[in-house]
Image 1: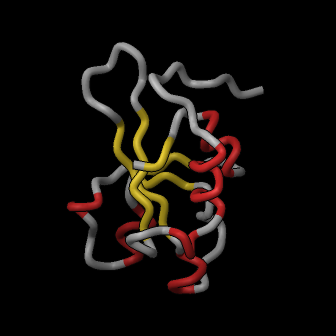
Image 2: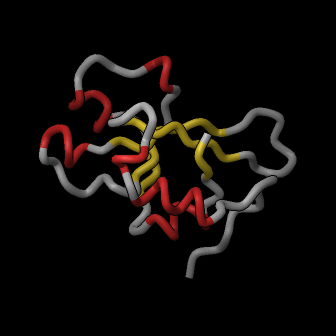
Length: 101
């Protein structure tokens, strides 16, 4: 059983709706996410990426790419190869402390 990350703010139903519904993402195909662990001065920054809609690539719907939106690589293959945290579901992503930025 996974444990919840100790963070300043927990994900809400709104966060979960956005995690699960890429067509709502203002900067589609990307959704900036953030995690603010208790006791850590800088937040963890990441992105969700709708790879399925862009290239038909499956398996990344609950993956947080540990990259700042302003530092995106030019090619999808580079993004998919970048450091990431892979969760099985949007609920697990939320339990990991991530929220919409």
